[in-house]
Image (cartoon, rainbow, N blue to C red; front, side):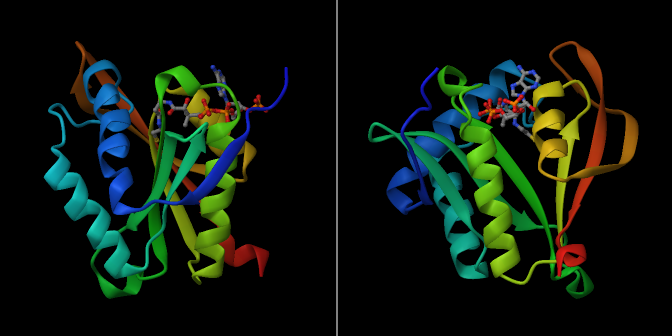
Length: 171
Ligand SMILES: CC(C)(COP(=O)(O)OP(=O)(O)OC[C@H]1O[C@@H](n2cnc3c(N)ncnc32)[C@H](O)[C@@H]1OP(=O)(O)O)[C@@H](O)C(=O)NCCC(=O)NCCS
């Protein structure tokens, strides 16, 4: 199969509605996020501006002029000793899953994290999401924890895995 022509680029404010729509699909259909109600577009703009101010990357994957997925870094904690530890999130439009976008976005955000002097990238992944676990492991994340019975969504309790990518070890 030919690879999709994908452009990975920093998000702009104009991408916020697509970023939000991609996310909200999973709010309704998947335990991948523990949100239970949709995020509004205003909330998403604030989310984007906070990351711009903090120098935290938000990347999108664009296919034929349409945003088909996104990946972002968030602060792990406001406590200052955690300053170089970040939390990563990634969501691909359902129609574009399994076509290599997730791998390209995650690799690109790890490069951004490295360039921004981050030491640890965390990924908090609901334990039943095998595609996400496999993607993260394949790019060097190690699972360091599994917390049982952490959230109830779509009629089931879910365990949550904690994974870390140790950028400091690459230096
Ligand atoms: C998980 C997700 C980000 C992966 O992105 P993607 O674009 O679908 O994945 P890719 O096509 O880039 O595949 C990358 C790797 O992911 C894994 N993967 C992808 N789909 C998979 C599947 N159905 N089953 C098992 N592993 C899978 C494989 O390791 C794959 O590598 P390979 O192609 O060399 O085997 C995407 O499917 C998604 O958005 N899922 C729903 C939301 C979600 O779970 N987000 C993560 C929250 S932490």
